[in-house]
Structure formats: C-alpha cells, structure tokens
Image (tube, rainbow, N blue to C red):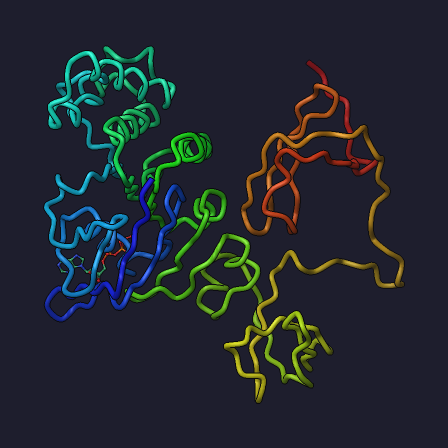
Amino acid sequence: MTNLRLTNLRKAFDQTVAVEDVTVDVAAGSLFFLLGSSGCGKTTILRMVAGFVAPTSGRISFGDRDVTALAPEKRNAGMVFQNYALWPHMTVAQNVGFGLDVRKMAAVEKKKRIGESLELVRMSSYADRLPNQLSGGQQQRVALARAISFRPDLLLLDEPLSNLDAKLRLEMRAEIRRISDELHMTMLYVTHDQHEALSLADRIAVMRGGRIEQLGGPREIYDRPRTRFVAEFIGETNFVTGTVEGARDAEGFAAVATPLGALRAFIAPTISTSGEVTLSIRPESFRILVSDGVNAQAPVTKIAMGHCISSTYLGSTAQHVVDVRGVRLKVFEANPRNQSFAGKDLQLAIMADQVVAVEG
Ligand code: ATP
C-alpha cells in the first residue's frame, strides 16, 4: 500500500490555469474522490498523477518516491477510463494479461494473475471472449481487471461508470467498493457525480476553478459544507440569511436571527460571526406538521429485530439491506444521521398503512 501526495500542484496551458495550488494527501489503501463539474481541472490532476501531463510546478509522490518527472510506465499506476479502452482483437484474458506481458512476467505466474484478476471482477467464465461479445458493464469489469492485474501502487479511475446505465452503475459502484476493501489499493477516482462520491469515497475533494474548495469525508461535505458552492454542488439546499446573536457554544453552534425565526446553526470557525451569515438548510431537514398543532407522524408497527448487511450513503437518503429473520429487506432512510449501519442490529418499524397484498 502506498500513499499519494500532491504538493502545491499547478498546471497552466498557455493562458488557461487548469489546476492551481492543489495539496492533498491520499492515505494508503483509501478511495479518494476528486469531485467537480466539467472544466474544474480534475482530469488534468489525474493525468499529471498518471504521467501523461507534466505539471507546471509542484510535486507528486507515491510513498517516498518523487514521481513528478518519471515516465508513465515507471510509475506503476493502473488506469480505468470512461470508454474501457480494451484491445478489440484480444480476448478478455489477453487484455487482462497485457500489462503483465509489458512487465515480462513468467507464463505460470501470468496465468495465475489473470485468473485471480478475472475472479475478483467476477468475469472468470468470459476469459475467451472478445470485447465486442460483452456488455458495457462486462467490458468495464475487464478494464478494471486489466488495471489491477499487475498490482499497481495506485489505481486511477476517470469517470469509469458514466457510460453505463443507471442500474449497472449502481452494481458497479458496489463492485468498486468491494474491490477497494479486498485489495486495500490506493485509488484516485474522478467524477462529476456527487452520489458516486458520497456513496463510495473515504474522502472527497470538491473542486472549483482548478482549486480544492473543500476536502473531507462524505458526511462532513454533505452536512457541513463550508461554502455556498459546495452546499449547492453536493445536493439540493435552501439559503437563508440572518444575523448571529451571541457566541458559538462548545460544539460550534450559535443562535441566528432569520426571517424564519431564531435558528440554531453550526458556524465553522473560519466563518465570521459579525454581520450577516448565509445559512444552508437541506430540504430533507424540514418536517411537515399539521396546522392545528397535532403531530403528522403516521402510526407505525414495530417488527422483529434485524441485522444490517450493507448501507449506501447518498446524502439526502441512505439505502440499507437488512436481514430480519432470514428475510432480506431493502430499506430507504430519509435524512440519514449515520454513514453506515452495516454489521449493526437494527430495530425497524413499518408505516402501519403502507403494507399491501399483491397478486402473482
Ligand atoms: P471534464 O469533466 O469535462 O473532463 P475536468 O474537470 O476534468 O472536466 P480538465 O479536463 O482538467 O477539466 O480541464 C481543466 C481546464 O483546462 C479546462 O478549462 C480545459 O479547457 C483546460 N485544458 C485541459 N487540457 C488542456 C490542453 N491540453 N490544452 C489546453 N487547455 C486544456
């Protein structure tokens, strides 16, 4: 496992500054996301890390190795592209073995590595097919197997799921997370899709105009956006202005007078409390109460204790798979307060009027 460090990285193409003063430490074995809209510089960073583009200034290190001036093939980084980029005349096994041939691996070891890599992406039974005999999702699995077959220090993924349909994208998200957990490989993943970042990342750098605007874990970025730009980019939100009344408490909250009434708001230490502040309030933070003051919550029925198999955090919602006495349930949670319940016991309840019998 190797960590990746970018120090004061800058790239200018003539008059266009694509990347400005980017300093990042990607922990060994972690899945790190560069998230931003088109043109923010994320692909340029990935290309500099791969060695296809030379930085104007700054440093790139893999562990203790300064790779800034090293040729791409000497960096030991694997890459997965949006368009798979498989060799059309080679079989699946030959494609996966390509990087091993380049490294002159002995035949026995090579065969073993191809087998292991295909098994990891669940494509063992397709070894003899040609790429045009595979679906898009299968081709992307092969591209993934090829990128990891030579055990790179670093895996670079450039919008790897954007050519797949919505259902496949969800499946592949889960696969990438599983592979990250199994291989403990350091991964740098570029996307403009905030759900992809929120559901997969260990850490996210939100980029804007070549710079990192905020860096943090998924919940930190979603729940505590530091700027208006990040708040809007990472999900739906409302902005309300107000004036701070009094000092922050120990947890960083302060009372703010707003047109909605007095609200308690988290105010990061970097934000001034004198004068006007802008508050971001997520749509799912509201509760609808009936007008005569009676609580609008519907009656619920408690069910048997369950055990959470997996959780996918998506910001405004989370999706869980829960086993209740051998029955696998899909459970959606609005406004999740936890990144994950995986491995925990859960007490669930069901809206009492939302259970229905169906035919067939
Ligand atoms: P996208 O999601 O559309 O790929 P991005 O965030 O990856 O966008 P980059 O491709 O890194 O953005 O581009 C950042 C900026 O640098 C853009 O303004 C782009 O036009 C410019 N740029 C990128 N490559 C070159 C190049 N080879 N020559 C000149 N300008 C470039």
